[in-house]
Image (cartoon, rainbow, N blue to C red; front, top):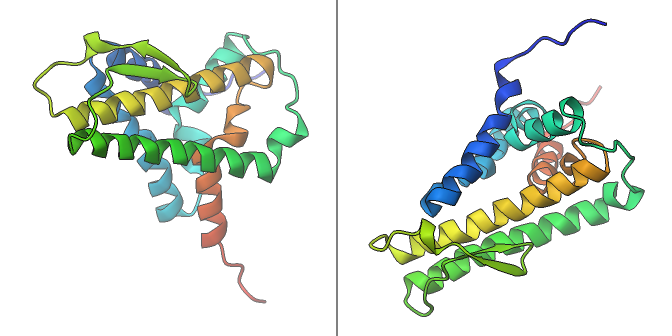
Length: 195
């Protein structure tokens, strides 16, 4: 059996570990998560393709390594409803509603209508104290956005890992909100040529 050639992007899974480790030490590093929001959109809008998702996504590479190489995946088929448009688009809408809620809460903190919440919320329900990662003196809305973004990234990472463990390694990629959005952009950009 021929060994698969290694490329530099096969090691992008390390970025996932670095990102969550940095956010555990200082919450302001959570802002780096915006890279995961912006790059797929740049690739989709600029190139009209899902190259980022298919090759450069650190989470996708992490799931590939943990599921395929380490062998943590049960490799089961996902239920059809999880692959369907209703679930994928519904999850995308819900995910972005949570993202815009983060922006709204950060605005409330910046407007001094609400105080900063020094906690990370996992699975949109469980608040974990995370106050050791916040240094006083930072503009409160900047820190609040970081807490919210880290919560969203950690929650989606947990969902991705659970999907990887139960189903095929990159099952998350089927219903990933950014993947669904970039696919929508690519379809909108593609205009078949008339013969």
